Length: 207
Image (tube, rainbow, N blue to C red):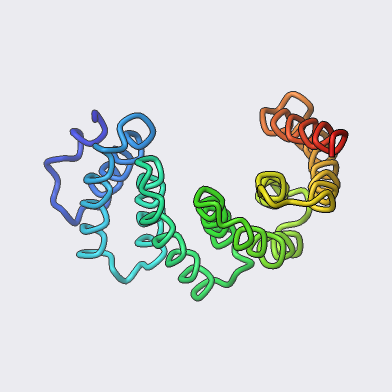
């Protein structure tokens, strides 16, 4: 709130005022998403009024709104917005762009939340993971996160097979090895990856 109050008196088209509004909306998102949403929607309206020529800026705010909708449990609305955002990023920057891949990751997460397992698996396995490996490299954080999400979808699908679990285990063994080397054994993402690998080993032992 302090950041917003500092710039509140400036004209609507002042960039710092607009940025302060975005910071406020994002700051409220995790703890008070019901208060965050109208702030982010007002921020989007402001950007459309004065900076509509900057489509990446518009998409960035839409991404914030989609995240807020997800926090509020409005997943059907969030996924519609995330499909639109991903499609536009791919159209203007190409699927190999890092921001496009992150938006694809958000879309895959929404698909998983709505239990659209096959759609999420196809998006990750056939498009996002191979593209990230080519454009960002196998040890980039986004690539490793996409791989982990693919493994998570394979595990979470209630209709998974033993082959799916074996594939997920193979993926996570590689992810854990790379995270330990690049980020270190105590990094939170390394620990989370190790936990998923342990879960997979236990599932396979009883499959």
